[in-house]
Structure formats: C-alpha cells, structure tokens
Image 1 (tube, helix red, strand yellow):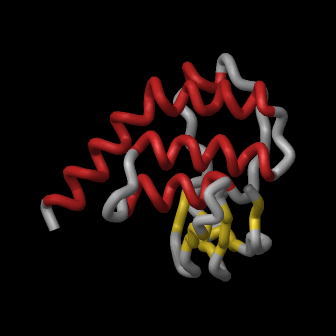
Image 2 (tube, rainbow, N blue to C red):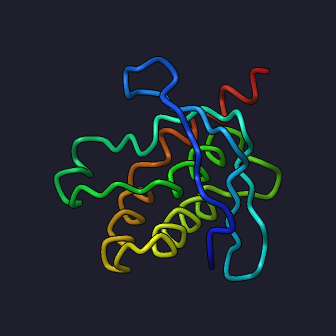
Amino acid sequence: MSWISDVHFTDVDGSLGDFLLEKDLMFQDKDLRLWVTPKGFVSDLSSFPWFVRMFTPVTVLSKSPWLHDYLYRTQPEGVTRKMADILYRDGAVAEGMAKSQANRLYAGLRIGGWLTWRSHRSRLASK
C-alpha cells in the first residue's frame, strides 16, 4: 500500500471548510489496484462527528480523507462502504499513522459512516 502522488489543494473560499484538489491523487492498495481521486474534487476533509472525536486523538491526514470522501460521494460500481472505509484505514497507515489509531478511525467509520453513505446513495439515485 502506498500513495503514488502528493496532495495539492487549496481552500475553496478561505473558510477552511471546503478544499479543492488541484492534481489527481493516487493510492495503490495491497492488491496493487490504483485508486484515483480526480483533480477538481471538493472535500471537507475528515468531518468526524463529535462522538468519534471524543475517542480519537486529533490527527491531520492529508491524503486519506480525499479518497474516502470521493468514494462515499460517487459510490463507483463495485465499491462498497466497507471497501471505502478499509481504504481510508490503509491509506492512513501508508501516511504514517499508527495502526492502532487507524483502526480506531476505521471503527468509527464502520459505526457512523452508514448515515453519510446512505445520504449520498439517495442523492445519486435521484439524479
């Protein structure tokens, strides 16, 4: 597992709420599959609910949130929520996060991520 490219982004409006990816961001998983978050994608980067933040030390990840948000919002054919969450965890470890902390983040995503996944699924179905 490794990040193939560096992340380049800018704050959309100066509010530190939404960020614009300036170049494609690429991650290669343990099965050597290449995952690309495309240039132009906008993300809020790890918007954890308060109950997850209580149990997880503050960590700034620069790459994993991009891929995870992209997969949640676009839900490509064949990509499950569990796959997206595993990629977040594995990407965090590839960025240098301790496995124990990445596993806590993964557990939080498994517990609470279904709401956001379902919301995006409904939005995509209505298009």
